[in-house]
Amino acid sequence: MRERIKDKMRLEHIAEAIQRLQTYAGDLSEQELEQDVLRYYGIVKNIEIIGEAARMLTEQFKLAHPEVEWRSISDMRNFLVHEYFQVDSEVVFSVIHNEIPELQTHITQYLSETDWVEWEKQD
Image 1 (tube, one colour):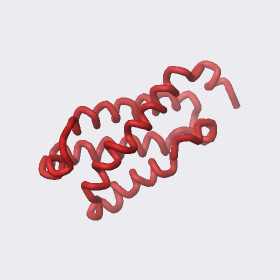
Image 2: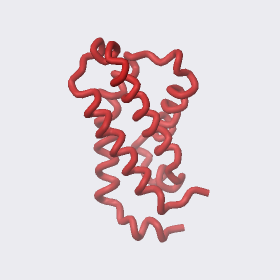
Image 3: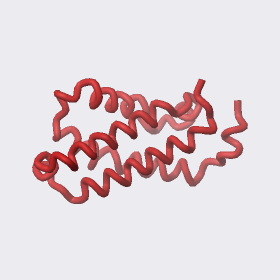
């Protein structure tokens, strides 16, 4: 059983991975990203970290925040890890620029607005 006390830590891991994504991706074009193999795989790894941290959040937390597609985030991680040979840089680029900004907004909000002491006490 997952512990509520770890939800905050997992959200912090997501926030940190998002910051690294933004640093690595910067203002690279899709073509530049594809050509910079080291950055590309650093970005992919951080998307994997986001997916794993999202997967490990408690069901209570995910149910309390249905505006985020937690399952899709976890599924993306699984795809990157298990279907790595099919990963398309276009999809990675799209995730960085279309999905990550919205996720960052939610994660920042959850970290700042959640009463973590109270959250950990709930059953």
